[in-house]
Image 1: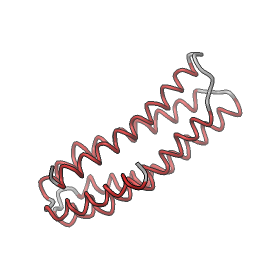
Image 2 (image 1 turned 60 degrees about the vertical axis):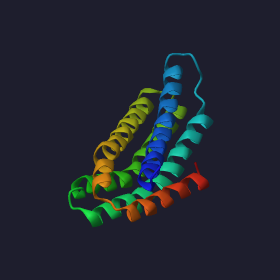
Image 3 (image 1 turned 90 degrees about the vertical axis):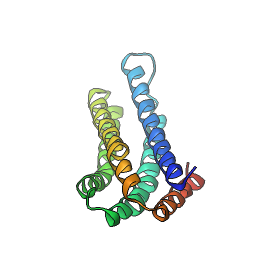
Image 4 (image 1 turned 180 degrees about the horizontal axis):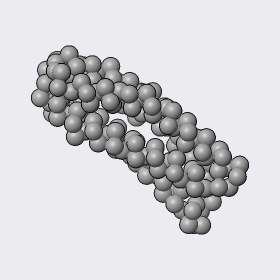
Amino acid sequence: MTAMQQAIAIIKDEHQSMGAVLKGLQAHLDAVREGRDKPDFPLFQAMFDYIETIPDRVHHPKEDEYLFRLLRMRSDEANVILDELEGQHNVCATLLASVRKAMNAYRESGELAGFERSLQAYATFLWDHMRKEEEIVLPLAERHLTGEDWEAIHAAFQANRSQAW
């Protein structure tokens, strides 16, 4: 497997892990709404901590520093989408903070609807973001990046695995 294939596999695997956490959050919230379960606030908190730590502090910085930076060096074709995605990386922490705030409001008031809306908005945002990376950015990267670029990207994302994943 080439460095490019390995790097892309890691990036997609990390996206899949983030999606699984989001689905887990939503599934637990659905069970609470339907009366099949009681809210597990420590579980919610742990899942939010994962999202804050892994995607926001580990995954996104590596995309910005390696994948996006190198792609900008090799082609102007991706600049518009990369500007959008980098901006979204900066928004993720703010959106997650609003989900945490909505969860705390739910814990205090028992009103679930605001928490559900906030979580759904965040999940939709993150899934759309990851879809754009996979369907637009990665194919552009495959066309424009060099073998040396992919070696650097693979090394950076492989380091994620040994640290946090």
